[in-house]
Image (cartoon, rainbow, N blue to C red):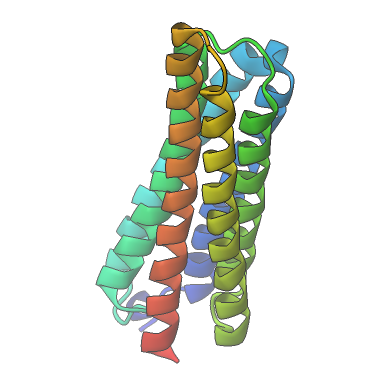
Length: 204
């Protein structure tokens, strides 16, 4: 009967592997924005890791279909893996946009936002690693939401600074687009927290 009940440990390890990729991706992005000389190489590595995260999410969905009785509702599993992969996609999008917009200067507001993304990604990773502990998951979700709120304030400060005085319109377009995508990435992290909270309450 073992085919009816595959090892659930692999299932939770798959989730944890995807979440760990988010922390690695966010860290690479923060390092590249802090030192733009790293950006070309970082984009290549980020693209590879993003692809691995997407593939891991697909593999998790396939593995779920092999479980006779999944540890969570199939819809919840799919939604969470999709949300996690979407965060990876957003991080990759920021890196690619930085290259396409030729954002080759270091700007502290972009680095600040990226550091908040790193923190949110780390909290997601810890929440997923402890997904069977309701209290731990809810505590981490609270930290993700705090990071997202801090990101909103950092985005507002960044945009205010960007439009101060008589700025170069090209610089405004370039950096506003990048700030927006960083803030969207934090929104995607918040979506993961919402999904984790729903899952936790449902399965408590």
